[in-house]
Amino acid sequence: MIRADLHMHSTVSDGSFTIPELIARARQNGLDAIAITDHDTLSQRFQIPADTGLQVLTGIEISAYDYENDFRVHMLGYGIQKPEVTEQAVHPTLEARHANSLKQIEILNQHGYEIDLSQLRRADGKYIYKQHIMDDLVRRGKAPDMFGEFYQKTFKHGGICDFDIRYPSPLEALRAIKDAGGLAVLAHSGQQQNFCIIPELAKQGLDGLELHHHANSEKDREIIRAYAAQYDLFLTGGSDFHGKFEGVLVDIGDYLAEPSGVRAVVEGVRR
Image 1 (cartoon, helix red, strand yellow):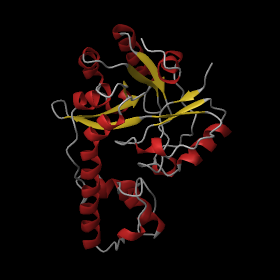
Image 2: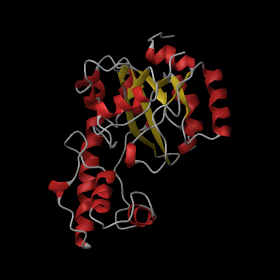
Image 3: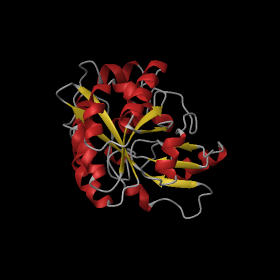
């Protein structure tokens, strides 16, 4: 059986590992295939080395929000045939996120944190995420750790930087993948508890569900399997690896795709 981790992030978005580092780690951990699913971009497709020693797929994780039900939705896309269609749809999110981060930095500097923009790591060399801000603060001793009390009090729970951008709707995220000839998979539903939108997304062309993920509990996985059976959806899995830019200790290959997901995403056997 092909061992495939179909969800991870590189320095092209909010991961701390470069693409070559991800590939080396995946080979070390005995994987046959991986998908690099950076947030709201497909530009990593230009940065995958020619000789990788395993199958490396370019995917995407689109950030969306269901404002009617008040929960986040993340949509994974694979096998995208027209990347320009998807990128046109998600580019505004990249720009808005960067502008939001600049506003957060301005506020932090007003409170004496002395963040130098020229010293920050950037996604794909362009875009600043909250992880990059926190990485700078930790590196300079302004915060004790990445995702502890400082982060929670500053970026969450009404803190001085607790504000966000407007995201596309779940259907818009789905269309950004399907209109580009790709396979759309609803990511880690257990994390966002957004199971209620699966029936409508399935009617609109959803292809799969992410079953194996560290945020999906055993009960969540039971629910996901039931929906997959009801709507004839394949099942994937992945570590959602971010390196040090993740508050959960998880390694590449800790969560793998089911055979149905391997057939659809890795082997390209479409239903």
